[in-house]
Length: 174
Image (cartoon, rainbow, N blue to C red):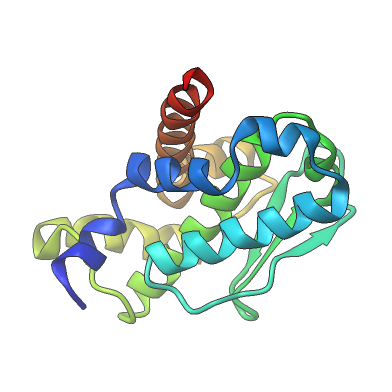
């Protein structure tokens, strides 16, 4: 794996900027639902390519209220709420795709399939992910919200959104 590919695992804003070229806010706003689903799959493909993951079909489903998405380790499958493609602003969908696919990255790193981009000095973070996975309990709100796997996924989500918003703003101004 090249340095660029490894660095891409952490370049959240760069990924967000690339996503903005695929899904400009004005195009999303005028797109019908089938087109939005297609755009979402393209974003899914880009995220997985950017983070050196194998391709994966994006699943749309009716999820519990307040649940935007989920990642299934055994199937390496990302599912997002069908409601997200109905929103006029794609930000929640994009954030969910980044968040759930970040869990795929974490699992690939823990399994040794991908190298950690910061090398051996960050082995302690990978150990924390491994421990958090072993004690994962979404019913325990505090343990879930502050889990190292969730905080890392939220950092990726936020970085991707910031990159998207910055680039989208520039595109809209042109």
